[in-house]
Length: 458
Image 1 (spheres, rainbow, N blue to C red):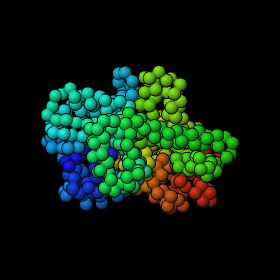
Image 2: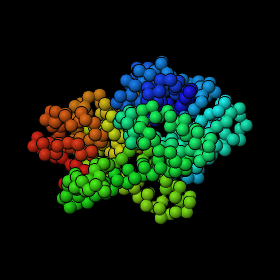
Image 3: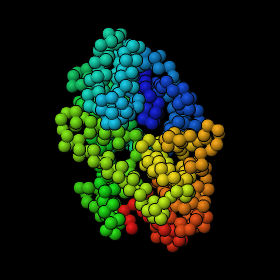
Image 4: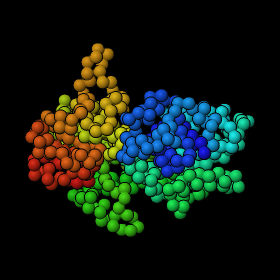
């Protein structure tokens, strides 16, 4: 088959790279209108950082994996078309702040309708509200094009930082299709693609609506666990319990399990908040306000955790951080990715800047331009003078030198093995560490002389 994927982002690029690697008989082309992004996919410095991705792309690119800006030409030749474009939360109109913005999905559907030929299978890969496939189907039906089609739902269940592992050995692959002979035939075609490397018992088939809702539900349940343990972390600080010990104790219960019970400054990423807000909107739309309120509280708790972290930092630093240097270690929303979408670091840094602190930020993978954009700041003013409130450091020790406090906001492994004695010797005293990810040995740091504040610990 000729496989086309519209959208060369965090989902489309890695997913298609794995399909191309495992299915050398299929031609896989990832298309995007962003010329810089496509150029990066064709270079030695990929636009997405993901462990193992470079090796997969290097092996398949030029053989049966291609990246192109020729969207129309690739669609016209495709037998199977994945839609993997952004579906952000709406910032305007009806449902603003909660509903998913589907304008890019509709544009893709109309572009497919204009140029597709033959018998095609359209696969929803983006995270979408329930019944979006119906909208895509109606657009394709109404165009009177030179093709026949089936629409499938195939949501991604990737965790950034382990995406290649998740693609290579997934817990499950979910494929939703119409319960008709044609729909079942189309679903089987996609099953056959994944069956090249995924055991058949892990490939689940459902109707389209169940598939679409399953993705939102999975992310909602995972985010709920994070907010739940973070809520308990606040209680632990008030009662002198240790949230790590509490998490370990309840995680040994087979009915609960240990995963997603790591307390932190809050969850981030492109999916959790967006998908929960979408779920809240759907519940409100279908007249289920109590259900909407329940899921919205997951977001409320996450926002509370981020603001609580900053309040504790300011309170500990003698109730003011004005003109104080705060070293921020980590800006990506989690380790092993350069993705900053909804990263807690953004909100923590914004609050610190509101308090007139000077933040010095170090992250091994996030580029300075992305950090300034996320913070809504310019690197220089109109006269070319550097922004003194935000300094992007290339060296972690420079970020900490002469700092009043260090805040760990991403759980990069390298932060666990830093020379903390060297950092302490070059910080202002008293020297504070605010471990927003609970990855450090607090007892060892206290022996050096640090005053350490961890989430859910006194």
